[in-house]
Image 1: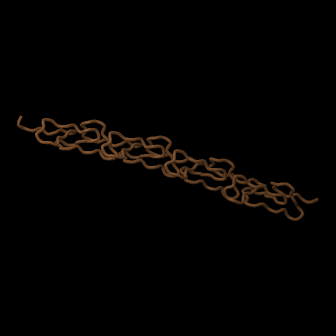
Image 2 (image 1 turned 30 degrees about the vertical axis):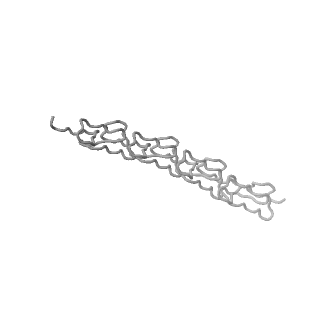
Length: 212
């Protein structure tokens, strides 16, 4: 034949006077006919066959950081890739975590837990005297005065009972009213002093006794 043939998609020929076309190698492509070279798959995409004419985007949860990739890499623990075609994974923000590779999103820390660091694989329990009432917290809240929390992993605080009080934030236990004092209300920040002619001789009293 006196006519030259055009190289088809997925192939190329850089030299004149040749008898055939060359297939694009893996990681490279030719999307139109008549190419003298193959294009490179960009970061975030890949091609794992020879003679390809379209690069594939990396799935959510995976990435390819370089050109000419032949496959994608799963995001590491504590990282995620939400969209297709990612060239890199993002670290989970504070208040969240990813405990599996290939994550497309991060989980929010449950109530009673927190995470103050990025790219975490788990959440931390709120210590005693502290709480989180919502999900996704980067720090715990201190129990207010008049309340306490003896346990970890808590999402609420407990009011101090009668005969006791808490005068600081973040208390793990309430303090008992000392002898000579009492408290007949809950959620108190201080104790009341027995009036003249009355007394208490033990701690934690809710009322005073009359002198006889």
